[in-house]
Amino acid sequence: MSNKVVLNEIVAADSYFLELSNTLTRVPLTAVDEIADVLLEAYQRRSSVFIFGNGGSAALASHLACDLCKGTITNGLDRFRVLALTDNVPLMTAWANDSSYEDVFAEQIRNFLQPNDVAFAISGSGNSPNVLKGLSTARKLGAFNVGLTGFSGGRMLELCDHSLVVPSSDMQIIEDLHLSISHCIFRIICSRLFHSVAAT
Image 1 (tube, rainbow, N blue to C red):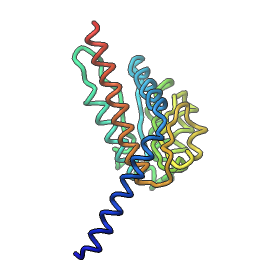
Image 2: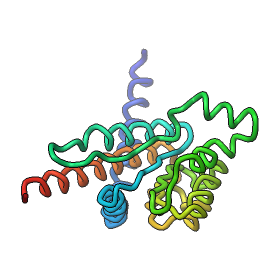
Image 3: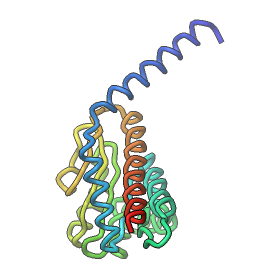
Image 4: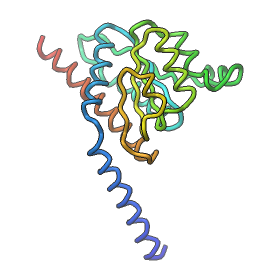
């Protein structure tokens, strides 16, 4: 590999992380706290949280569900009721094949969601048809809708009670910060649960 190629890669990496750092400073932190509050309130009333998205957002839905289900376990407290709607591949492909890919989340929501549950959608663009249909169905069934998105927020914003828009038009930057935001939400919840036990 020539020195010129190495130099170009270093410059590209530097510019990427500079953009990531600059975008991070513009993330609306109050929205992170608000989403954590919504999830904690769902936990306290024993409601369920259903997380969903496509592609990298599907991976994050699974990741966040894992964190909330296992990582929040605190002795003496109830457990979080969280399900990633991205994880039942046979069911998703059945709905996609027999009906439409737009139905893969909405139809699962019809199976499981109860009033006052939380529908947590993740979409970089905020315009994924199956995410929008999932949120719309959840709203009709009485859910609190939460969203993580980017760009200008997309059509998802009008379907969410609480949302956070990463101020970027770069999908990789958006996805990087969605992961960081989900970890921040997880840490806030863990801290509050720990302190609630310590106070008793």
